[in-house]
Length: 456
Image (cartoon, rainbow, N blue to C red; front, top):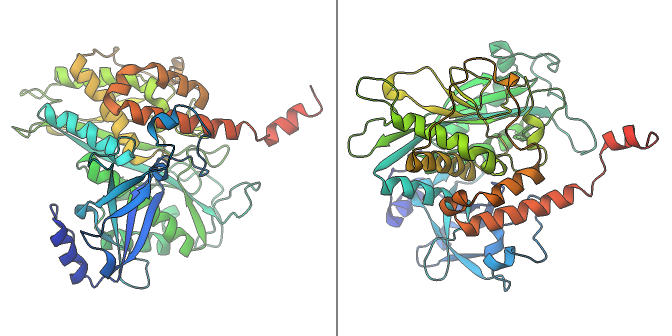
């Protein structure tokens, strides 16, 4: 299996497909949720001059597949449901390791009929934010840590999720943080996941058992944000597929099981000077730079308003509660896991900031665009952070929105983020999330029936 070059033309892509004897090509577009949309083509039909199209709304639908009936959404999306033109990014080509016949998957970018990137496609949003840094002579570097749960198969949405049965024949009933033996319970699954990742040339590093029963975490090596967002997109798809082949589910829900910790996607980030290759977060003497503090200041200033971008569902807000390994505010501190913005122990060259607010359920492109946009505004506006939190941040008040509806209101009011992320994207995103929130509010929960039915 040959690895795709870091720079590729379409001719290079075709040579790669031929070398790997590919017979089918999955042409993928990440939608607003992070679901892979697109078409599957026979290899001989996948040509540069063929072109491929999808309706605009395909990347701008809700998690249930619904669209708004009216409103500002259609100020951005053509009411006539016009097509987008899709162009493959050759550097994203990967083999599909679980396919019976040699099959490749290639992520595509979305363009309008004038040749401009569709501004509300998630990959376009992240690409635009990276270009803002590039224009300043800066190069962002990120490293995500992605948590997820393994669960027993569950075909009934009304049935509570349970931990899966491991090789011992028993399910986990207690928390096994960092337990090697608990990971080994699922050796066959993880061997297949690592095998798939190796065949796909994914940049994965360590695997650990997290706090929750059946909760795991995979860490990625640091790299450019767009490429790593692609890898997280591929990885989520890969883990779900591998889990199904071992008679279990893998879920990236933020809070899938009551009483257990939620799942996050912590994103470590630093910024390099493109001319020198040096980390701008450190001074020549190794001390933290003004840029380091300004970046943190931007995160503190804008994360609360941007919260809905990385806590995108009603379930997301169940994760963000006191003493559950998830932040409730945007305090910052060195080597402090109770805060929303952590600076891990590191050398001056590797000085970085960890955003611990982001949920595992976030679209990786939107999540990385969000955190980089907040930091970018901090750098541009030289925003000073609050004093460092040196104690337990859970003893401080909540400073993040507590619900999807509240978070939507905060984002709509923060026009600085609209300018950086794009007004079209903000319109599409908030309209879709409003639709999802309305749909959720039509559902009556077991808690309401238990406590309100006969008592109010």
